[in-house]
Image (cartoon, rainbow, N blue to C red; front, side):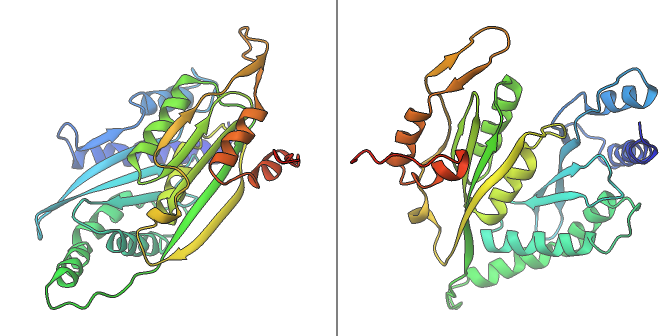
Length: 292
């Protein structure tokens, strides 16, 4: 175990202890993996050899003025606080643009911390001190005298390739994250594993950061398509929801799960969703036109 990882994890446990003392009520802090802290302690004690998953959790903050709540999603990379923390705040009382501005302000504030400084508690304080203005701006913009101004957003579609996607817990997490965020697309399980996620840029990027396990090495974003839009992006979507795509497979159905998905069926699926051009990008194979 490298000293830097060990020191980082020890600092993370210290910060989690402070957070639980600040938010002692049940449900205020929700760990994505309830065993995350125990596994890290075992790793530091030497009774666990495999590096545990990142600490991921959501803190529900009560804002006094106005009376609203903000859910702050936090991911601690293994080298945090010596690398950047991943933070994302959301509230049902904020529209998309105000939520984006809130997170831009939060990210800019956290970026002012020096490597080695713990910053989750400071980020919470920043939200409690500064978030009211973002809700106020929305109230003003929603007023009857306000002139509607078109807001430009970036609509993004990411094509993600993995050597394989088999594990039930990983498949469950991908679907849960996809349905929780305002994204559409699919996850093709098996070998290879393909994920397409589309929606506004901040949601797609949050999806990408969230699903990546620390030890998921054989995964990459092969292609991304983006376009500026002043609308809600619904007319740009190729998919209506986020679902798991199950195709026929061939190969060894034994314990190794070493079987390949039917790429011919996958190509037809892409054609139906106006995405045939991605086939060559993903696999390096030029698709044969059904008309030839």
